[in-house]
Length: 279
Image 1 (cartoon, helix red, strand yellow):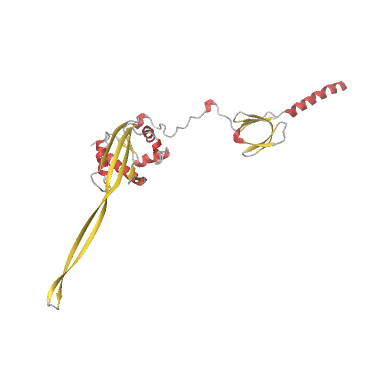
Image 2 (cartoon, rainbow, N blue to C red):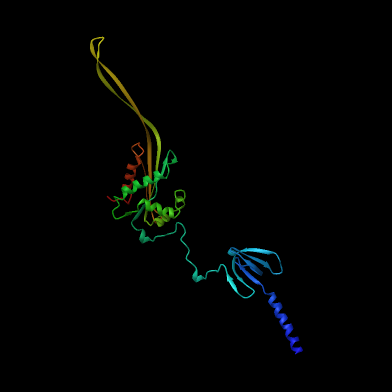
């Protein structure tokens, strides 16, 4: 019996030592393996002590793939996806969201660039000119479909092609975003020139009796008016692009009239010249 105890005790001691030497292993996202003891697990981080040390470290859960505990239990925090589970990448801004068939025979009108005295006139003027263009062309588009400006602008904004960033998109990218085959891009430039002044007046007469001279007299009163109007020189430049990024029309027109709405006539003139116009 004494011999049996003498044999068993060293074996049990060896097992005890081996058990004491087991550690927790933390596998991080960057591939590092940390060996030691996990002392605490919080909402966003764990507390960890390296093997042979006493200093406690805080490690973010977001940096950990898994912890293999000394007991053999494994806890995952950021389990990597298997290749078969990988999700498709989301389309990048400007990537195609419509196919060629969907875009056929469709036209979009971009908000106009409106420049007054070499300064931007604001988005409202550009939207107004865009609507003027849509109203006229939609009546003369034949088999073509003109997308309404509200839909066009909403799709552009959702794709990040806002007024300050739209220059970062090519025309074929914009066609794909809106889902059209053709895009109309135009700029209205309006500069002040001279002022026109005019005067007008009226004379009113009234007959009154003059007792001193014993006769009737006519007294007259005059009213004069003066008005002035600012004259403008207006030019509109229009381009039409396809979903292949090809420019199929590019012309400019200087307005004959000198009023602020003179661009409307020039706009209609240019639209009639485009390959998109139908009588």
